[in-house]
Image: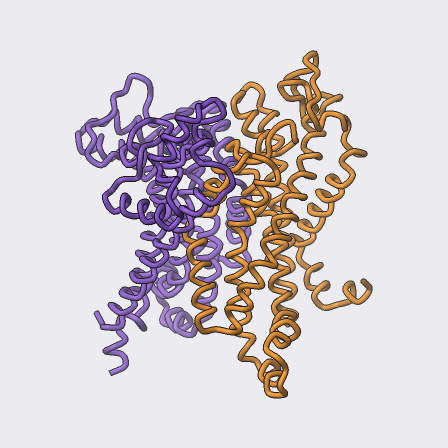
Length: 344
Length: 282
């Protein structure tokens, strides 16, 4: 590990912290500066003036904007995002309840994106301009241009309604008890508890939503991997490996893929984090009880604290993922990882 | 026009079959949208028309794509839906592109603290997942077409800021920019007359690609009930409405879903084709 590596990470941490502050200001501004009284909007036209005043007091709406922001940040640091006006519970409790379901969905989709997207891209690059390549390119194009909710509806129609091989909605079948909560991921919790039938049920429920969520990312990953692997196939060191008579497989995985991974990884990080946006659509179609569905409900109910909390948590997750990806890229790139030794 | 048709870029564009498919699809969609009142079999079904006798009918000779829950012809509503989608896309890009390109150019060319300030603000906007930012804004606004356009524009400009920033930064090191500066042209003049024109081809290519993606995001918003409201015909709301009656009344969902897919596909193929044609022409 070189000092350059840690310096890269340090700079990245600092900018992420700065951006997170910016995000909190932005969300705060969206919530407070938009015309209309947030308290009145939240309570609806039938509320009395007294109720509105009470809520204004509770949300510090009578203070100046900087004071309001300061209060907001102070409560944030105490782990308090206020009460949800929609569920009447603390927003942090709501988020704690709903986040695991969304994370499980997003993690499954992310795994699918990597284990399907990358091999497809390598395959297409290996057989460039052949039939395999054209099929992969067509599939990835379809993945990218089809809206996530359209994938969700089509998959549901085909596999749940017509073929009837996978469940239509929810995380578990009716009558199946959730496994004891350790991680909040039903599949992993069921495995930990050794409940095989619950695991099978949870797993069959997550296949369709995770696939619908992953298809855009799979398409993008395959496209990108194809482009960068195709480029490395033209490099002299691959030619050399071919001249040595190394197997196709070894060349593909060891010589062509590894350097090509660096640009792909950045975009995959973005795609993975963007799945949180797609989760809103997938959860709506498959009645998946996650954070995204909670987010839509809070938006429809004009629940100020709920919206702010949801967006903040999602943005923080987005930032963390991108930061981890940048660190991984810095580590994968020998020019950054080994700079000290390399320069000296 | 003749010059365009004879140019090398057009030759390269035309040789690519997929690009031509894209051009064909986009032309078809634009024509259908513009002439929707003339080509739609039932132009009156665009609004709050009700005909319970013919409600929820499967595709037939009179209604090729079937009818919806209150008897409106789905094919007609798809044509008018294209109209709404295209207007929305154009308005969003007309708002977002000048703001983004302007800020990006200034940041990239002037550098220094202006660069730092503008690009950090851009980073903030880009660090909220695209759809989530638009939804958060819609959360505090009434769901109308105009507000949906504003929300999508707010999430869209940072991408153009980043693009223009990268372009203007690399362009400002080019010889012609230095030459203009050396002969004493004012900075603003150099920015608008020298740097900007050389960034435009890349910006226009991105615009072509983005028309499709704006349609995609806007239909996602209205799918969640946070965009255009009924009775305005909107492809996303049509899919959402029909999805409640799957699998029996599949036509209510499947046809509007394909309509969105085809529109995004068309603009994507066209944009990709343009990018390849212009890139190689350089």
